[in-house]
Length: 135
Image (tube, rainbow, N blue to C red; front, side):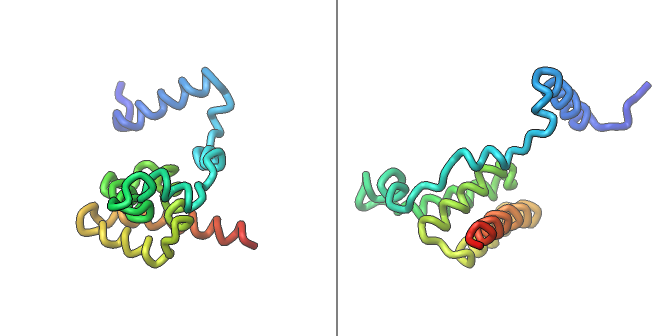
């Protein structure tokens, strides 16, 4: 008797079943809800902690966040929550939507179209959510 699913699908189903048996609430867990627990850091705090606050001749926080975004795109945009939070922090650090879109598009040469398409979709979710919050 064989199962038509591939081994990865079976592994994922087993993990979901195990999580559900340990905690039934995990059946409906949405990782995006976790993102609301991590506030957007103010631009000045990011600059102090990650930018020129500790190294006046180093990279600013906006540049560091762009490098982080590029790395996440290179990995196939698999870390969805982290990518969305990085985009949110980039906007707070002064990046424009156009700059973020260009950075993601630049990675298509290195990461491939599927990864950049996924990253662009996640970035759009963030900008759409932020626009909805302003209304």
